[in-house]
Image 1 (cartoon, rainbow, N blue to C red):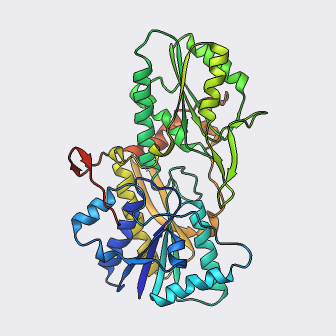
Image 2 (cartoon, helix red, strand yellow; image 1 turned 90 degrees about the horizontal axis):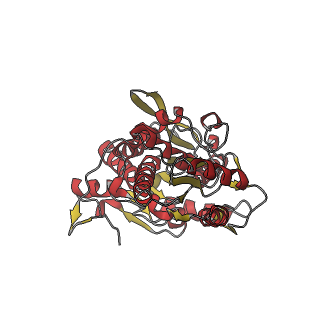
Image 3 (cartoon, one colour; image 1 turned 30 degrees about the vertical axis):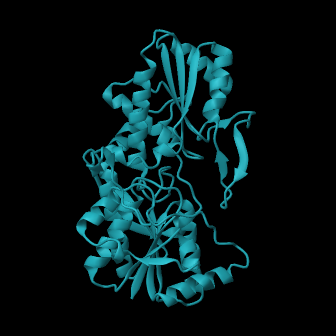
Length: 401
């Protein structure tokens, strides 16, 4: 029997670490003949574009480099299995699995990828196809997957965002003039990544002075008053805002376009608020959109994130060998102080097409900042520094041409 593994959705600094974990455990188990990688997610299965990973991962150095390489070395996709007339798609997937003698399919991805895991496993069950297992391995910088304490990729993104906000704060304080800097951070419906900037308080930083999340309504007038008030104490005001904050009576910054899963493309809340502040406060103001940099900044990845991502990939193989299917691997936190987790699996139906929002009890009554209780949750996830392989002063990455 052979296995196949694919990556899907947005790239992260840790998704290749999970791929490495699947590969390592599969090889060490001695239970499989070939370990295939599907190019561009489930689309690679549909189009039968598979590679033998052993042709590329030839030694421990290759695997170590893979673990420390950001993005998806197998490529990604945002393909949604259709609700209607889907049998042709399922038959193409099944033909690929039969042709390559695939007994287990591992799909590394976020919420939309878990939708694919659920649909595939349900189709196989409905049609009495019992010799193919489907296992989901979580991944998302948004940290919005239900059933898992946190998601692989989130810790590294959070570490980068915190370091960047701190550097922006250093930059903004060099002048004596009043200023406002608005930092737009990813988070369509859930504000976990933006909220994690509260970690800077653990090092005595006052920035960001405000944190705004999609979980609470955003009032522009109140925002302006908040900034005016804090500017009396801090000449350089730093604001962290999720890209998906819900502005009352305004949708000017939204593009209106959606992806294959119906998710709206969001961009521009930072620039929108920059114009608001400029018009009302008449001070120096700029907006910074972190954009894709926050997803794949492996030069400041979290060691904890990479280690856990390898382990969850390994556990996915163990779960498949135990006969399980239609499930997603997840982290269960046993303790925050000292930090301890273990890995289990849950039915993928419990997480697919659901979203885990940032807890409202960790948002202050004003809706503009985060409580210290959240710091205890976040800090363990950004611990540990990684050593990048360098060449000519730049990181070296593992690439599959």
